[in-house]
Amino acid sequence: MDRADRLRTFVEAARLGSFSSAARKLELTRDQVSKHVAALEAALGAPLFVRTTRSVTLTSAGETLLVRAQHIIRLMDEALSAVSDLREAPRGALRVNAPMSFGLAFVSPLIGAFHAAYPEIALRLELDDRFVDPARSGADVTLRIAHLAQDLDLIARPIAVAPRVLVAAPTYLEARGTPRHPSELTAHACLHYGDLALGTQWHFARGVETATLTARGPLCSNNGDVLHEAARAGLGLTVLPRFIVQASMATGGLHAVMEDWRVAPEICVYALYSASSKSLPAVRAFVDFIQARLADHSALARVPASDAVVHPPADDTTETPPGLPPP
Image (cartoon, rainbow, N blue to C red; front, side, top):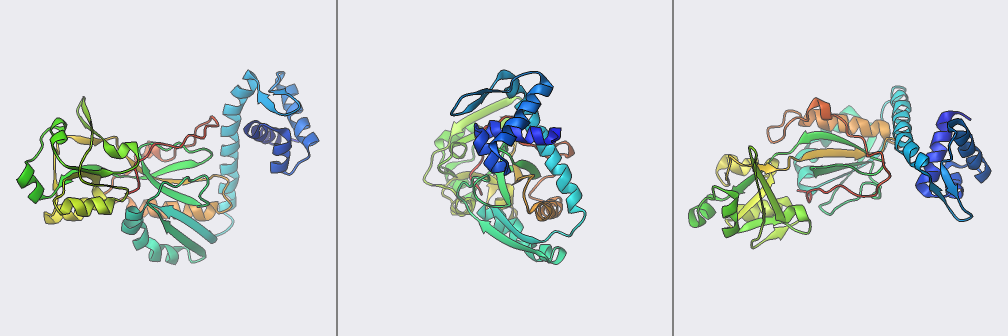
């Protein structure tokens, strides 16, 4: 029995709130779990749990240890998986979930090249504009467009920055005028994402100056392509990722508005996956491939090297990150 086994047992008992549940998860007996925890407590000289006949709860020392133990276990699993990856080529089934517009624009065109590079990976690509909980969807990789990624027990790897832009059709601007300041948008028709708060709240920044408004107009949708077409038809202004509207802007079908203001916050395309996934070699192959192919795309921006990997939060929170509805 080594320290790694003791720490893993402790983390599972703390996460599940039960020695019996931890024993089932780790395929141990309850007595083995108790011995692992007792040995850890003896080595530390402090009790980690308050035990009752029905449950166990963490002491203050246990809470302190849990924060660090979770991080240690994740790093250890990643290290072991990385060595394992070197022994064999990525293979097997790989299930990927992506937003509809992003998947069609960026993932779908790369499927042929990805298959040529990794012929032993059977890719299952699911495009869905509904909010998908990465921890429960069953997907090996979830691509998400958001300004924050802190999912329980997942690694969030930013693969590209997705700048957004405020646009409108020239016919709309001729009829209603061109706004120069965010405060003027309250008098305009705003086409916005539905259902999520960040869809109706538009935020802008110019230097140290910021502005926020609630977008209101004749249409809301959870799909960026729908908003794109509505804007092209002259129904109003909309805020969309540049990759959706770039072609229309190039042909004059849409014009950028208030270009001296930045749409905030900056959002990234994240690949979310588990460090303990059985498909980790295939996951890493897919994420590396997608990131490399998107690095020089004109509608996206590179992720700063310092942000290459965002590890999940150390505490055991179940809160999902606030994010934009998938374009």
